[in-house]
Image 1 (cartoon, helix red, strand yellow):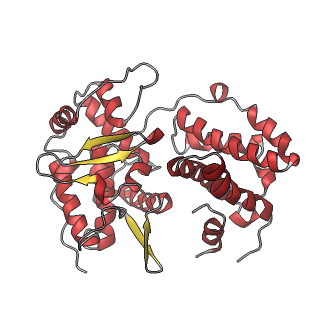
Image 2: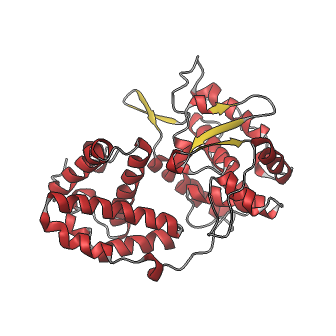
Length: 349
């Protein structure tokens, strides 16, 4: 493995993620995961936009100018909301603050990051979402004659139908899935460890049964992750990077056939799309906000109580025969690089 240019940085990252947050601050595993994702996103930005390999990253790169460029990238290319950008900035500030406590040499960087003001630099971006033709195009891209293609297709179908966040879906365990006829639903754990029940379409439940027969064919462990990858013979929770890779691939291929497919296909697009499709079909915005797990929508919406059956009725009414979720089931299946090592060793995995 290539020698790290600034091993001190990665040593601090590991201590921050594995000791400071969970053991000293007693934060939940879900919250620690959010911090890890934010740091990984910043490292991905350095690699993608600054062409800096992971082993060449140094602490000096966590300066206000670079972090501001990172926030601009989140807004312009990943279409993140102000709230998401604020959360990512808060995580980075927290890490730099921890480093400043460990080494006074980083105090100036901590002060500079405090000067970043999202209110002054952020202009709300328009919500990007799939048209129904674009959604159909991307759902057709996975090869439904392969096991992996079936997994990828079902993941995108469930992501759209549930409107769940990517992290919520990746955290699903078999015990969180109820496929009872007429009342199929999943239970997700969202921000602040708040759980909510989300009804899913009967057709989506059929896709799920097909997926389970291939990926969980034997008497399943209820605590097993619904979506997983196999590494060195062991099942592990599927990662955000894995999802980002296959969505980027399918997005590019689908765009060659349908010009309505957005250039940047990412998991949150499916959430935006489901919300917009439901709203256009008549679901009240306050109900959409509740269904998505929002306490408010752009500070103008009040939290609206809605039970699972009320949401199910609205969703079924809003999903007519032309919706991609009503398509036939996919057909039967016939059937490390240095950066990865660094991430695993320093707690970024």
